Structure formats: C-alpha cells, structure tokens
Image (cartoon, rainbow, N blue to C red):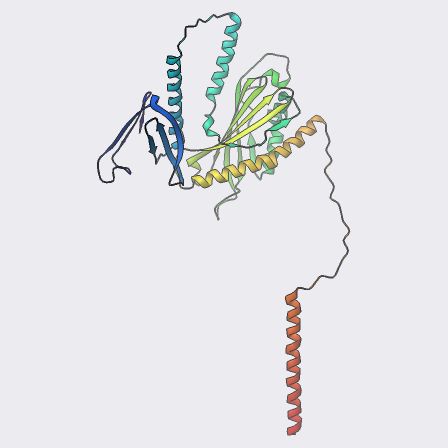
Length: 361
C-alpha cells in the first residue's frame, strides 16, 4: 500500500482476488473517502482496515502496524475535508494585529508546541478511573502532594505496596512554574522529565521465570496553564517479547480550587507477536487494578494527612462465640457403623469356631 497527500494506492501480486492469477491494482482519491474503520480479520486478528467511498467498500488486511497506518490515513482524510470546506465556503476576511493579541498568539503557540511534543491520542485506549477522581483541594496542592519532587516518598511507598523493589526516582529535570509551588515569582518552565527505575513484580509470568523484572519509566510533565497540566509515562519492561511493545499512561489534571484527575492507558506494538492480545489484556488489567485499588486509596490517605484530617481506621470487632462440639460428617458415621458390623460378624465367627473346637474335644 502506498499513501500520498491525495491518493491511497494498493498493488498486490497475491491476495484473495488473485489466487488464479492476475494483479490487483487500486487507486483511491482521498477526497472520495467517506470513512475509515478498523476491522478484524476472521473476527480474531485486529490487523485490518475498511475504507468506504460512495461507490464501494475496500477491505485491506495483514497490516503489521495497523494502528499507525490508520492514524496516517485518518489524518490525511481530515486534511482533505478541511480543504474541501475552505473551497466550498470561501469568504474574504481581514486580520488586525495588536500588541495584546500578539501576546495571546504567543501563548497559544507555546501551548501548541507542548501538545505537539506529547504522544498521539490513539496511543491511549482505556480509561483508568470511571468516574473521574475529584479532590477538594487546589490543583497547586495536588501537584505538590502527589507529583512534585517533594512527593517522591509517597510515590516510592506506592511502588513498594505494588511489590516493586530497588526503586530509583530521579528529580524533575527543571523546576516547576512558581505558581504551582506557591512562590511569588513569574517563572514558567512549561515542561520537565524524570526517570524511575525499579525491579517490577510480575503479576502474570511464565513458570521458571524470575518474580521481578527491570522496569524503566520515563515521565514527562507539561504545564499548559494555571488550571491544567499533563503527565505522560512511557514504560519499558525487560520480559520475554518486551522489545515488541511499550506501555503508556497519560494523566490529565484540571481545576483550580477543586481538582479533577483523569488517566488513560494504552499499549503500542513496534513488532508483531502472536501474544499481542494477551499482553494488552494483562497490561490493562494490571494497570487499572493497581491504580484503582492501591494508588487512589494511598493518595486519599496522603491528602488527608497533608490537610490535617485524621481518619480512624475501624477496629476489628471481637465476637464471643459459643463453643460447640463439632458435628461429625455423615461418611464418618457410616464408617463407624460398617466397622461395628464387621467386628460383630468376626466375633460371631470366633464364637462358632470355639463351639466347634469344644465339641471335637
């Protein structure tokens, strides 16, 4: 398959249409495409794409990187749609630039630059928190308590709770904006990175494999404005087939006096493997379970402690129980009865033998 700015071309010597010979050659104009849909081949393999035009449907299969091909074609079709709209809805307009507008333009440009550095949206498929998390604290405090360098102790405790060990957390590569640290200055460094390394506990593993594997987590933080920042995490784990894929997690933290936390997870493959489905299922299951059942309860406890709220843990109630004799199971009763019958029968035989012996004497 060949993709250009205006056409999608397909050329094949061997496919379902050429089993008896001939060559398949197809050219589709991007402006004629109505939709592009991800499909399954034989209802099992997620390696196919269906392209629909007004006249026909085209089904292409056996993509090595189906998601990347889909993303490229989808973006090109969207560009064509915008061109078509501009031609059909042409209007003359003028632009007036003033100093204040130029400042706004600069801010918008910086925001675009940040977004362009982030991973594509299609990397992320699964919502982690449904519904989203809501915290009765400002976004500045949430950053300081959960994501700043000062919160490294909290993050380390969380990883220990998940079973990880030998944890190393580097500081953020740049200081955060003064606003997020409650400082009086106007410094605004829009992004920073850090690396987290640990021996990660393997929840699902092949027999005879070690219980832990080296995990490298590359984190990037993007401060969009005073009410929003992103954190993206890229995971590489040293396991069999680990070179075939990477896992990704994106945090979206928004709000001002009250904060909302969202997170999405995804798994992207660079090489084909027959274990793709299992890797995605197990990775999604582990990530959602760990963040929902360990990270969030620990975060709530840490936030309450930072706010000075003490929550008493419920004490276990000791109930007095009346001791009763254990009931014997039915099969034990039957066994006892059978033994008694056998003993009785043997006793009768012994008695009869004694009588016979006494008679002979």
